[in-house]
Amino acid sequence: MQEKTKSVIAKVVVVVFVFSIDINFLMGINFIYLFLAAACLSLVLLVKRWGLLHFVTLFTLLGVGNNMVHPLVTCFLFPVLSFAFVLPFPKTREGIFLWFRKGRLDMYSLWLSLLVIVLSTVGLILWGWGNEFPKEVVEPLSSASSYSKLLVMFLGLPVFAFVNAVFEEVVFRGIMQTALIKVFRNRYWAVILQASAFGFAHYAVGFPNGFIGVLMTFMYGLAIGAIKERTNGILWPILVHTLADFVIFNLVFWTMIF
Image (tube, rainbow, N blue to C red; front, side):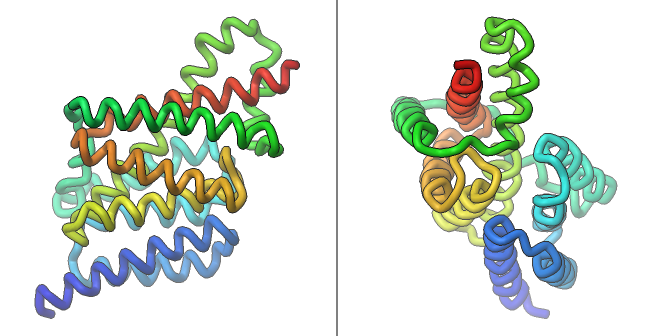
């Protein structure tokens, strides 16, 4: 098989796979998603695009477990399993940590980050006033309400926000966006595709959720993806995302208290 043909197949596989991720998050059709994921995985092996194997494996696990496993378990279990699947083999582990960089910060990135923080904070507060909080966010915070409010606010909520931000940034801006750039050689398409998956991932269980939530998190994913590419690292996206999650968890926690 010619290299050009392999490249075209890889691009088609990635587009179909990301589209199936979006549909699965939207409708929760696990058996269709599993079939498409298996087909995509087979084609990745056929064209020997080893750099895509980790990405496809991770999101296959995330998609199948989307409606079957608690989100807190998902944050830890599936990334560990996906890394365990590819790390033993030299070809599959090559380049899978390209996203693992601190990066650099310039004035443009700083101002963009501050703008994203301000707009996302305002947007989340406005959305939270008129919508019901998802149980996946409410349940962990409900159990924390029995502890000291100061302890929860200054320790529990920041840690919770940081852990969630690390998971989502590693998965979407780290693993997915890096894999998409490898295939398309185009950062714009990579940012757009990962943002679509990030948006649809919030449809059922995210904060914000629903179709408005998908649109809000899609725009947020575009902005954070741009910050990641501008800084060439994962640290600043994690910090910006942590602040947004800290706003979310404070909004939910104090609303429940009062």
